Image (cartoon, rainbow, N blue to C red; front, side, top):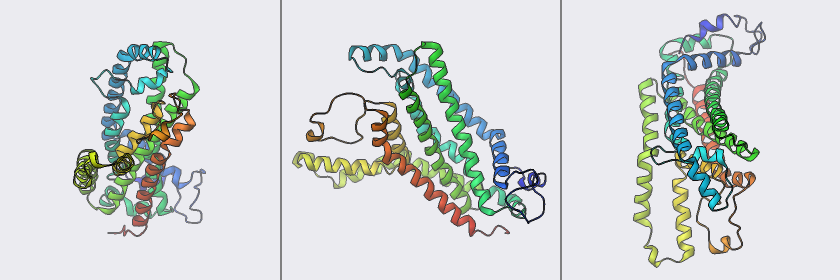
Length: 341
């Protein structure tokens, strides 16, 4: 990051009478956030990941558009609701996965890229102590860095979603329903929260570790564990402790399935995938097994937006809670950190 203390000289006076507003009416928080947004947008690592994300988006859209006619015919044959714009985000021809699968894979890298050197790079370059010498509160620095990264990610995902809507409207001419629009907006919101968790985690590691390489490698190691090794660990635990299903009753099988789903839900990627699949596919009525008593009388129709949000509410609150926990721990460590050494 560039020297923020130099940037502050033009915005904040050296007086300590008023730490909330400078002479031009800008608060220190807004000044730091604008500076961080400018640094992120002009950094090469963000540009590279942005190009990678845009390329995967266009690749997923190409796969969806080439297969959209069969999806439309299938909906007409089964007399189900079309939801064409949601199918653009979920339909694939088998060559490339849907866009939300790309986000579950690339989103953590984007978050780690934005947060792994948020604080330790400032300290190693000697700019953090100069920044703290300015008439600003210490927590404003941490909050502004997190908010600026979140603002950039939210703008990126929202731009891609609006681009998909506009492209779909120009190519197909099909009018978008209000429910489709709201579901896509909630998809953008959950995707932003998912990346926010990785930003908060990488910022926590940047405060804990003095070296940027240590924080980056630790964050990538955590991402690899949850992406590659955690499903293997869950499978090993299930095989080791679960009895033979042939000797279990239906209630016991459902109970064990709930335990397996709960263990898999501890992975942020699995939590994100469960949430967005339920939102983008209204036909998904539950994320777990249903008993015959629960299925009795159920009408095989798509869920309303409110009902889908009720299904994904645990996933959303889980991601928000994990993000707030990482940020609160970062706040605690940063408040107690000695920045003069």
